[in-house]
Image 1 (tube, protein in one colour):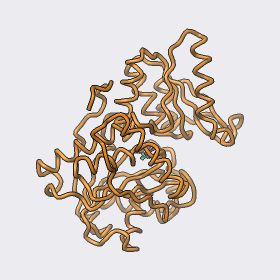
Image 2 (cartoon, protein in one colour):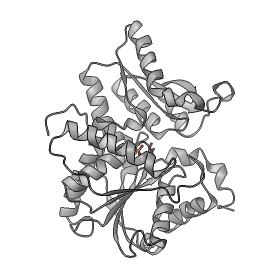
Image 3 (cartoon, helix red, strand yellow):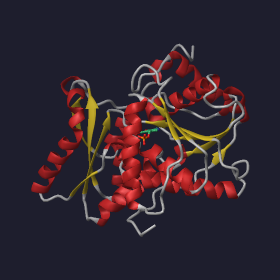
Length: 335
Ligand SMILES: Cc1ncc(COP(=O)(O)O)c(C=O)c1O
């Protein structure tokens, strides 16, 4: 690959682990890549994307990073903390139902955003579709004040950010060759939670490029399969434009069958899976992303969309602060 701007942020390689209790729970030969430990409080999948995006921002001499997400966005929190570590100002545009009736919580990701000193601007749900335009107009405002702004898209999901997950596949391939993932036969399928599409795009391209897996199953946590197929295809094309060695992506299925009630709203069954996984394996999944993805994995095996006994790599993409902001929802499951 040509020398693109990149700054080292990931504490890698992140481990690939086996928990036999989870083989029993899911009915597959399950390996888990711990991208929940890409770092400290900033940790999770988005740190991989920020290596490239903030590398580009610094290369362009930016001093103020703008990005957006839901109120309890993990991406926003990771960006805020990494910006603080690099001496960059950070402005977060966070989605809420009604900004006038939404005091900023002192918990979960928002607590960490505030710790990091990020400026938070709330956007009503109804206007969030215009988030790109809102951030561009805020960029002009910062430029007028003599600042050098740089906009990171929602979830860091553009072609540049997605390179982080292509590199993740290179890292995984090296671990497989070292015998750290039950041999170096390609996985039958890689399973992960999907929201803004950058993780899926990078994994699908990297899985094919480095022969890590025969297919990818992106578990939608909201919206539907048609929506995500379009988003992911766009990011795949953008990512290829940065790296000419990337050709075909691995076959990718977007699974929206068991995504649950709505974004960030979990069902009792999903919460039961989260509690069972923690008690069986010590791995903590969040109710917004990974808990849903693990529950969907079990459901896909039950439907035989994934064969019993298949060799599966589950990407633990982190999100612990999101769980800590939703403890009250677990009253029944923990009773
Ligand atoms: C913990 C976690 N897992 C998975 C995802 C999904 O990644 P992507 O937005 O790249 O689809 C996100 C997105 O913010 C996330 O925070």
